Length: 450
Image (cartoon, rainbow, N blue to C red; front, side, top):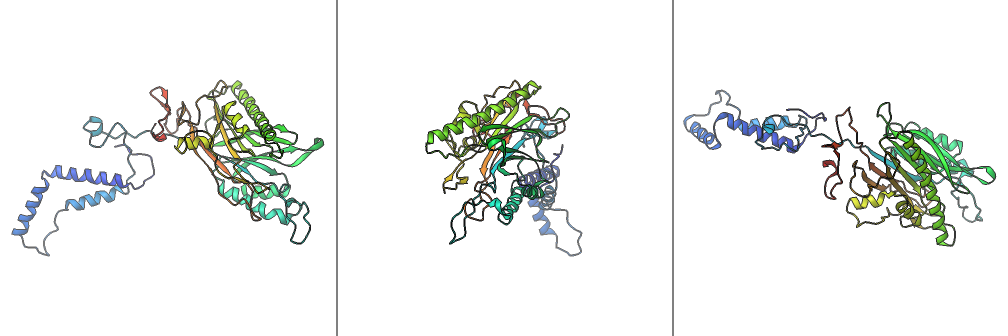
């Protein structure tokens, strides 16, 4: 029997199966049934007087079963092909058990997190003193404790993410040194600064962290201007460890849309929709360049960040209807039968300076074909030509109000299963069955048994 290459582990069902087979084989080889064995023991008791000097008796069947069961606890689990069932009378079942090919999952974890730059956080005046507009960045003893806690939080709680999209990144030298001290061994960082009035630069901007030992490697960064003093960051990555040719590209759009500060709600929504479409067009241009450079497998495009609006806003609607992006939270809810379709908010992720609780941190994704077109296989459905789907989408609960906070936003993470259509030579796995890619899964079918 061919053994699996998995690490040894105990499986109760496997142990019971091994014990049952051993007992059955022992009975068959001895040529006696249970009734015959009982009669023999009765005759022996009636004709033989027990003696302490008698020779040890032969092993009992229950002892043999116990030994086999104990042995099964230390033997690696065996995986049986779905075509070979226990009890089958086929020659394949009587012969060897073939290992069932496993599915290699290329699940990407992408997190968006607005870290609340110290230049934007107001510091209230002490009681009894006049309220003066002051910022946390004015004094080191004000901003340093939160900076230390924020950096440790990212290093400890977000280290599982392959990429982290940060908004309101502060370009203060001492802040960056503190942050890199805690996270530099885990992530590579690339940042873009916002433009200011008169050709100057603002003190904050956007940053993307790419895990050094994760599934992606950082290739480059660019920025696109979405407003008078507002930008989005376009970061190019690719899969790590896929030979000299390199892995499939992944484009990340780090976004921070305008705050809805106008009294007119329609004006606010139109401004945000205009900004997010600039981001979508910029990432589309970057994708077309990849296709012209010989991208033969297609690639993934992700837009995430602080939208300053929820999934029912005009900005989200434009991304979905005009640019064929899929909201990861809505997809995850539908795939897990948690909704009847439509747009789904992830819940409160932000407490505004006006005391409003909003759901504004979002992640969108779409797949591009090798020719540079949008794949019409929606991530909202379970699987597609390459089995891509949203594994998970959730927020990291944390305090977002009061003085002792790390940020006024919660991180949101989407995990995306993106298996390759090519054969993995090292592991011997393939995602092509019978010459065809896996078909779309039934809503009740396990993605691991496609």
